[in-house]
Image (cartoon, rainbow, N blue to C red):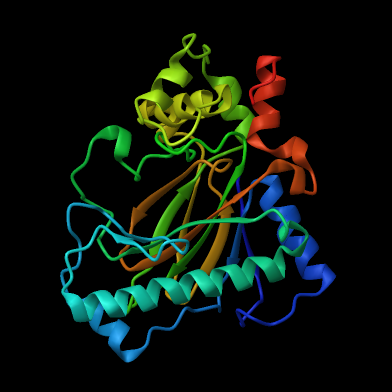
Amino acid sequence: MTQVLAFGREDWQAPADAHERDGVIAALEAGDVVAFEHLPFVFTEQERALSQSSLLGDSKNISYSSATGELKGCNAGPAELQVLHGLLARYADYSQTLVRTVLAPYTDGLQVARTSFRPQEISGRPTSWRKDDTRLHVDSFPSSPVQGRRILRVFSNVNPFGESRVWRVGGSFEDVARRYELPGPLWGSSQLLNWLHITKSRRTAYDHHMLRLHDSLKADAAYQSGDQLTHEFAPGTTWLVYTDQVPHAAMSGRYAMEQTFLLPVKYMRNAQLSPVKVLERVLGRELV
């Protein structure tokens, strides 16, 4: 069963010693959640005012690209857009500082992906079963294949009203991988999806299988009601997790920050624990 392991860090920028780095890396690669229970991401006065505003457009999250500075998913006015831009850029900077400190052996390989602000309540949100994040799942991106890279995410509960963010987490990735039949992709489908611009790059066999696992887990009522851990992340908590490896579900809560990183498996301490290596052992063939 996945564990949520608490570490004592209270400063985003403080140096990390070898003991802290080794503990964090070992926990993450083993498929646990690393929680810094006293590491708040503190809003400025202008940013706190956003909690009183209706910001979302048609999207459940407001996202930001560090590479382009582009904001998506909000219907804010010019003044609020400026504050939002600063908020998300600052969280991206803080998250990069944190992971490059506590995960120093990964530094050369870390690739910064999108940043998001999630002000909407999770519980009761109308959606399809496939997009329902209150169902246990492992992450896979339909339009943005990761081609075997790890999906590392940093979350912070920034709720100004004292509300926890409640998660469920499941068991080991290998158990999940052995639970379902995983037929391979149709011949030529990867090239066709890329040619039609349905995917932003080539979808590997690994990406295909991860999408099937994502959907199979969400559709599996027995798995959803099976052995699992429920954990409340209080306001002021920041946590790290490989969301491609840990079956997870966000059950309730609003006002959270999130930063995504991608990491090639060659930078891991133990690449054999990565989903791509596990799936290759289970299926008996190379997937990327």
